[in-house]
Length: 490
Image (tube, rainbow, N blue to C red):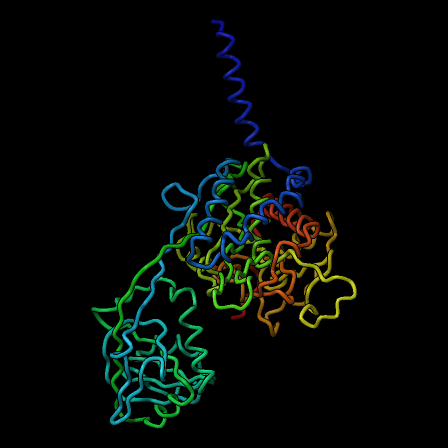
């Protein structure tokens, strides 16, 4: 039977479209697909992301939500699949804020009473009341029995807090180097920090068993309490909580191979910055974060566009995550890795972009820019630290394509700056996922008001974003996922 002509045309169009979607994007063909990533497009996106209207994209804030909506709108326009909660592009995170009653929150031992803000601040834990013997720890933990005790530790032992939590301490009280006016400034700064919001906890502020609080003391308060070792003390925390929502933005572009499309190459960045400070002198009070990490935000967005709008796809699927709260302590990537929106073990690598927009100009002698990379240079971190094969791909793609000057200065777990541990890729690495991190280096405007769009080198950004895109294509087309053949040293 002869089909009506309109039905034949519709069927042809349908199957033609399907074939286009599943055609393999080879490593060589990917060069043409990369041409979607342009300096002009990057500038257009960044002009919005780093605009004053977004008020520095603090976590949480209306400005950060506006950035998330902008990212999601474009992803939907290009046809990328939602990868967040309930068929959306958003993975929602409920933040919490504890408000402590200043009059009732105190530490009492005999005739000594230490009070909130005057002597100490509370970080984490829950409300309640505990009593126990004071133990002052000055050395490493094995020699101490802290179960059921109130533990006082010096500034040098802050790294032991997690172990103390697991050892049954009732409360952990840490000393600080802040005294007098410096303590007052510290307290004032903490009050402003993210409006007091923190990542969620299962602790209840007002009822149930008390979750051990972490307390930071002024130098004077620490000296008093440490001097009361072996005495009994009572710690009373009176708190209430309120909540705010923030979110990661997550999208997926499915791969072409029937089996390998169940695995993912992840691309990531953080789209938050440090907000604004209304108390600053002068008219400018907004930290726009054009480089940190507006540059990564729009680079990943343009990479997502290149994949989503290409008729051909690589073998594996592509996962894109814009993380919130990186500036607060890698919040979004920590949450994502604990609440994956793809099957556990399916992410074969994570390619992270955090600051790729600045270049050190010839003749620049500013010491604040001494580690800033030049117009054709970028730091790559992680290529030698987890997966030999991923490192080979990262450097091989660059050599074959645009030939950027890849600087491995910080590609070392012994790097004193600890950059490997300071951006979102680290939470993927902790999950056993090999990573690479592209980074232009710290500069004069790092976390300063001057981190503006006008100072961005968009030609450099284009080169790096195209190279990351091609790196992702190559990883996605590998017959075998990059093996983790080196232990993560931390």
